[in-house]
Image (cartoon, rainbow, N blue to C red):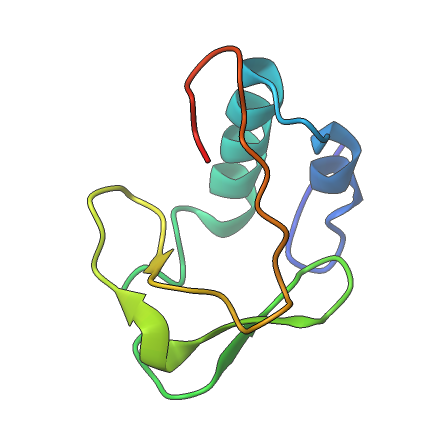
Length: 94
C-alpha cells in the first residue's frame, strides 16, 4: 500500500499508544518512504507545525531547535496541545 503526503492512512494505521519499538520503526520507515527524508529538518520559516492527522497546532516555529537526531526538535509544545506520557518498556522515552 502506498503512503504519501496526500494519503497518510498507512502511517496512521501503525501509530499506537503506548508506542512500541515495532510501531516506531514502522512509522519511521513509512515517513522516510513518503517524504524521502525529513522534509522539515531544515525548515526554519516562521509559523506553526500542525498535526498531520487532525490539523491542530502542536508547535511554534519559535520553539524549534536543531536537536541531536534526524527529526525536528522543539523546546516545548503549544500550551495544552500535547499530552506527554512516559513510555516504559523499551527506550524510556518521555
